[in-house]
Image 1 (cartoon, rainbow, N blue to C red):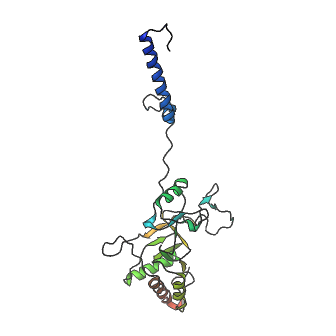
Image 2: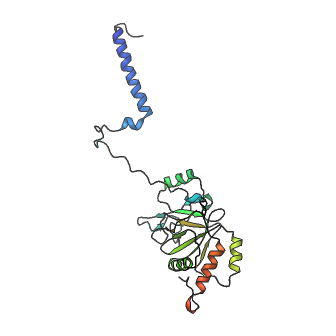
Image 3: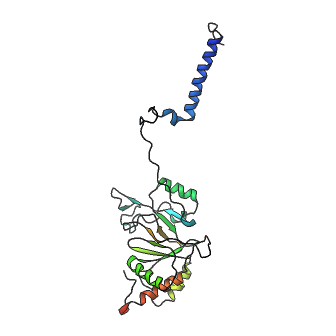
Length: 256
């Protein structure tokens, strides 16, 4: 009960004051950042500016399974962040998480790149995802011009300063083995990114310096389908082998 020395008006005033204090305390508990913000007089620079927003995570590329690469470390950002001091593809390979963690789940992708916004983007090739055939950049540029002149339709092409990767429809290791076995000669400069492999995608730093880019971006199938068009690996390998074996003097157009 209130002391008898307070009259009715005084008791009402005390209740109002205590009620306001209690409401301010509730507001502070509910919004601690707003309560602790410096009083700067109408946004005139009285407090420290808010930190800049983090870079948005890259979305899943065309619903392909991706994961972050290990990235670079050190003051000059040249050393691979993995434990191997002699890593041959610095920054451009999976480490933690491993390749089996690749996913198309947008929430998982956002969480990964929310923590590491500058991490390279790796495509886990094979299965239902695209595969690729890669070759040296200069040789690839010449081969693409030749194949375009022949009227061959190529799919997406991922380019780095040193190598280009021609994306193809998914294939199995057995299918690739039969294909290569049937060829009399396959240029040693060709590399195959199939089941259990991976490929750097834009926007990522390349392992030897520079950036990964789209030389040719993914296109939909004819007829307006949303499904992406990818050539078969047999057609691409056959065309590259033919382009290689037609060099003057018996040399290879796909040499390094």
